[in-house]
Length: 336
Image (cartoon, rainbow, N blue to C red; front, side, top):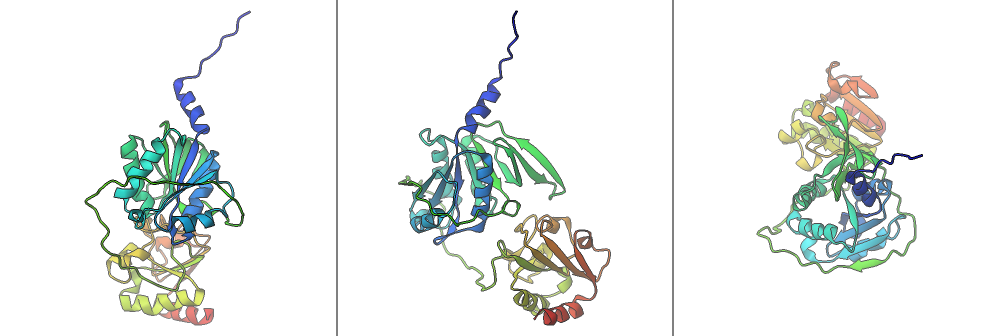
């Protein structure tokens, strides 16, 4: 008696080999502290199920590696302390990361980066150099090759399966809880001396908005202002005191940023930052689909708007219909 045997196609063999490779996790750091977005992407990396190799680039990489030793679940830490990497210029980062991914001795099957401005800069470049299709802005890991990501400004979700031998991913920070830095490990550290390719691009300067308030991307509470505030003076007089009373970060819609109410680094939305704080207070925000894409996953959404038909009330947990110029000062005093 004979039994028929079905041979698996080569595509399945590729997935099999991927499952036993390693995941190279790009880590962003400010000085010696690991960014919250990178801690979230490490959570996504753990869900892939491969051994995780973390890489730090820049002159402060050695000091940042000490904080990585507090993270459980890593396999190895790679360092490259070249000061050319200090400002995360993609023209310098992408070729170095691509060569690492191609290094057969490292056995890299996956590369993951947080879906931040830096990650969004380097991932397409690495994809072009490797001739692989990146899977960007994932919000869920189903298995080592299958991921869920939002499309149409978050109005639909699509499940994507990658058949590339090198799977390139960026993870939305607000979709994964940051891993806790509470362990005490002694991971092996390998110091790299990569050859940095020459580039016509060079770092000139930066002008950062400095504030003692929580950073917008990691703040537990956010107060955001929209077009309804009408002017920069109103934005400063109403949003800032309320944010200070709540100990919150400050955000804004694109309309408010384009009107010059505040700096574009505070923009929340499809073309700005994606946040998911415990509390999001939307003041004078109509609720355009592009803005909702950046904040609708917040735990509790409070909306203040005089237009009771404003779309923001469709996602708000608490809605207050009223004149924000009267409501916000009173709310600020009560919070104080």
